Structure formats: C-alpha cells, structure tokens
Length: 60
Image (cartoon, rainbow, N blue to C red; front, side, top):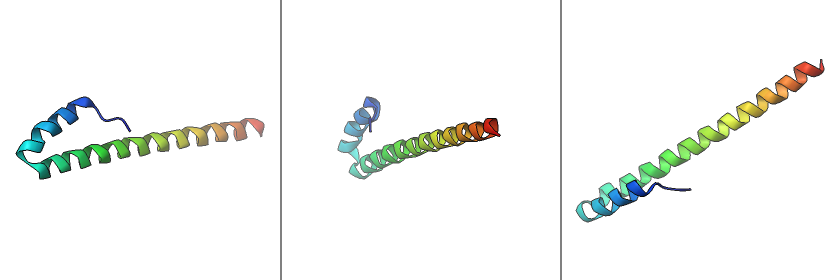
C-alpha cells in the first residue's frame, strides 16, 4: 500500500505538535486507502459478472 509523500510530511509536522492528531491522520489515510482498494475490487467483480452474463446471453 503506497502512501503519498505529502501526508507523510504533514505527519512529521503534526507529530511534534500533537501526537494524537498524527495518529488520526495516519488512521484516516489507511482507511481511505482500504476503502478505495475495496471499491476497486468491487468494480472488478462487477465487470467480471457482466462479462460472464454477456457470454451466457451470446451462447443462448
């Protein structure tokens, strides 16, 4: 899982000021990343289902 360098820079600045906020920032980055990965997997599954359905329709 790749994390953009900008949030890491922000994390470094926030770490010094407020460690709790830093932890929340990283947690949000991880959650956002997992959300977009899960959406990507869902889209892939839907596309595979559509392809299977098209093959079934064309063979009938």
